[in-house]
Image (cartoon, rainbow, N blue to C red):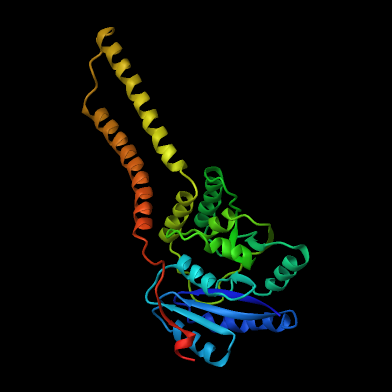
Length: 313
């Protein structure tokens, strides 16, 4: 029988681990005549009892495996660890809070087998549970990244997708330190089928994604697959040079022809603040790209494993 590996990143999810296991077990039972499963929980440096809950599952169910990090390395590192250690013919990544419905796996597997897709990915058609501000920012983020990036970025795309071993190997061949998985999945290509579903709210607990974390993650996505921000900063530099040249000519003409005295310091102060702000903005963009290069050149490990199921079973 073929095997499906289910990669489940976890960070402070003691309330959801057992609920997720119960729900995914129902799907496993439905598909047991078609395929076998392994569940790989990634404990991303949780501070609560998440690891204890996962250990209990590993002790009672041989299908359950886990990897526990030495500290919190982030969801991208957790997903990478799961993909690297998965042994299945097909691999899926899922959120433990059940915002990714496990029952969709049956249809996803059917599409890969019968219609010969390399990947079946999901996207949410609504954003239930999101605030108006978050919905607004998400909508414009996808519009911006689709304009800036040369690869396809599907609006509402989730990390929940079922992939063939060939596609996963292609993703793993990219060893970059700064990872943005949605972009990497799109970059490698392969035939992908998109299925839609209504966004689900968390079954328990609270989200670990603050607005600032989401903002930096979104900016990582733009800078990882586009140099357009650098082009934009260069364009702003040229634009402000042109504006400054025109203003100089206007001031000279007003002074020589009409004898109009040069305005006082308030207008000058406003101009200085504006131009300085634009300079710092452009410098910040360049510095962000440089910092990413700096992190890549150090070649530090993306994650460090402290414990696996082999240490306790």
